[in-house]
Length: 56
Image (cartoon, rainbow, N blue to C red):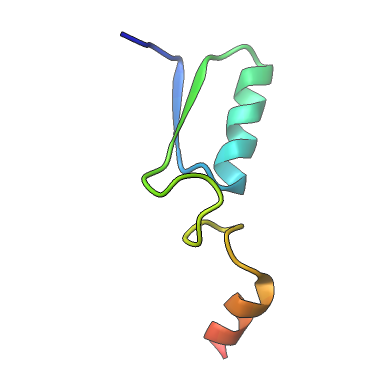
């Protein structure tokens, strides 16, 4: 069985950033995301222009 110190839910840009800093601090980290990294549902998964068009 695998164990870790911290589980980060969401592997978009913010989750990856948090996981990076936790690793640098010495924690073992697992990233969990039901859609995988860089998907269209993440904060970094679409272009800013397409997000802008949806809000207009």
